[in-house]
Length: 495
Ligand code: HEM
Ligand SMILES: *[C@@H]1O[C@H](CO)[C@@H](O)[C@H](O)[C@H]1NC(C)=O
Ligand SMILES: *[C@@H]1O[C@H](CO)[C@@H](O)[C@H](O)[C@H]1NC(C)=O
Image (cartoon, rainbow, N blue to C red; front, side, top):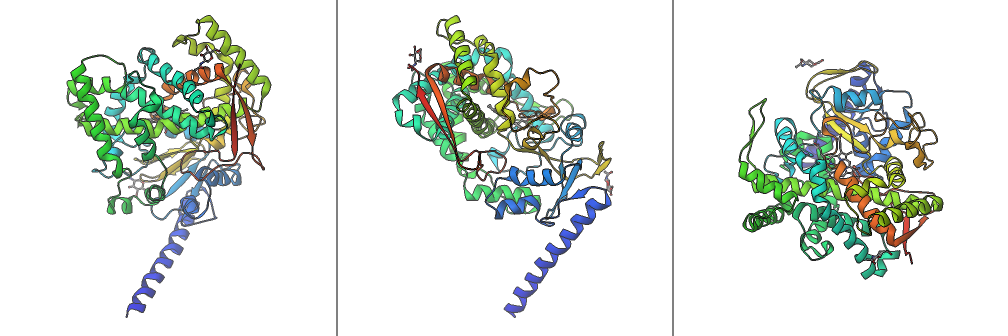
């Protein structure tokens, strides 16, 4: 009896996998779209679960195997999934046809407090929160906030001085310390202590460690919304209480102190004073509760720390193996410090043009976020290839692959900051480290200020040497991120 049941279930599952795979092939063939035949049912998400490789690298195989196809259908258990390669189609998705593609494609369970953030929300709720968070990143705000960013950058140099073991240690880890200290300061404000000693920062670092359970939830969310909802999965349930309590306390304290610090907490106090937030078009309302604000704070860390650390790591990696470039940026940075009497200002960040080109080229070659996701919310058609897209279809679009495609960037593997000086070589169709369109990275301008400030203070005091492991740069298993694993960067004090 029991054996029969097991056999029946087993046969049922096998048939489902077989027929679903056949259906995937049929579905995309009928629409005149190429199909990735390697795992016709599970697709790249399945490969990600069973193989020890980052997701972006699996997608790069798909990209390279389908050189001339504008899009490639992917295996999936439930939602039809399309990998869209053509830059014009990508622009259509991220910008021109926003009404069909406003959804990030990440399923959220209502009671998953921290999941209600600007990165994962969709529709009117996303619009409200995005509008309310945007003022934090205007030029005027960033200028007022610069003193916070500068303190973190100075603390970074001081931290290296106090911890000489860090000079030959894990540079990515050290940079993650700096980036979490900087973002922690921008969110929660600063005191007189080093931003590196913040207990909040230390707790957050633990919360952001990738774990097996997080990877599994990511895979379930990618593969099957229905299952994700049915299981009531909470992405960051373990950290909810800590984050909500922290924000609650900090807001209360700030109200009591009644001072302006130009950080995120200032914005929280203002939003709570103003009360209910409403979307004009739909009438949808959101209360600026501690929970809602905690979710945004948490996601500034989640969306901000690793990519900024990766961008700095990529920049340092290249400076440490290109001595002429390193010399040139040292001279440039020294000159700016001299001009400003040893004290950086917001304006001075924009005066290191060559360093900015090196950083921009590092964002191309060492793209921190490998690919982006969307979900179609209304039937539509992609222009290149005339591809019909039905409501519900999940979309993946490459970032890394565009940046490494010789069609768009001649000699893509050559690190060449002067690409950014040559007319027409870099186009915002193909160079998309921060995404594109309405859901463009909200922190992009802040990231520039934080990273340039950090690099300038660092370069004033340190030089670099890079050691790349055998076989060139390799990457560790990550879902959306591009994380380099076999490169050592040594920091050398300048005298
Ligand atoms: C070099 C550093 C960074 C890189 C490369 C980066 C990259 C990206 C990318 C590719 C996206 C997706 C855009 C899209 O889907 O079209 C994104 C979105 C986002 N980023 Fe960043 N990011 C960086 C730094 C930051 C920082 C410092 C913060 C926070 C302070 C931040 C907060 C966000 C948020 C909240 C979103 C979601 C926006 C939305 O969906 O409306 N990012 N970022
Ligand atoms: C960094 O270098 C500058 C210039 O040499 C020096 O004035 C400053 O004290 C150094 N910073 C630290 C923390 O040592
Ligand atoms: C979307 O397209 C599908 C199939 O092409 C069709 O069955 C469905 O009715 C359409 N939905 C809407 C809202 O037009």
